[in-house]
Image (cartoon, rainbow, N blue to C red; front, top):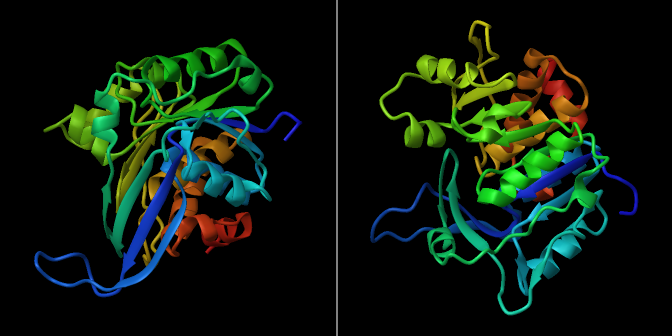
Length: 300
């Protein structure tokens, strides 16, 4: 991709081994039949890139170093898509970062070696480059890569590029400067244990000028900005095939809404519809939401 893309993404880009079970989730000492299995792009950034491409948005992504098993799969998968992989570094002495996810409807269990990787003290992700970001119209930055995530934020701010982030607590610079911060139950359980959702939202909203969205699985989404009342929205109801990638798709929907100047209500509704379409099929990378599907769900 020689032209400047619409969106820059920085964060986790993985190879995901997914296993969809036929008859419910794993039980101790019991056999489970695999209905389908795949090795496809994953990670918060990898999934968002796939979804944004399906929505007609051109993307450049950087983040996790690829490896000898992950890189060829990603290169083949994205070769006919508007996704620029050129910033991604290839780890020539490692198969690359992968996770393994077992899925049965509403339930999934991811497995990996992320705690081991982060505990080595060794950097296994890229340093964002200004040349890759400048000129883009919007960005998304995962918070997992410390100073490098902050560097991506600083470059975006320097160039006036609004960005979406995820799971950044109220005192984190990524939250304080974000156009949109999407906060999940996993984040609130880690940082705000014992607090009710409304109080968490108040704390988040008062420390940033951007839009804060609190997702609660099948429960109401809360969203708002500093000085506003907290707004609520119910998620769309669909038949769930797999929840793998639901949050990453929601993030992609927020990027799309930001890129197209949607109001806060329009953006939250659009992101929710993207996520709803995503969980109604498996595997998500092969059947990502299309714009007409998302719009049709919104208009029901």
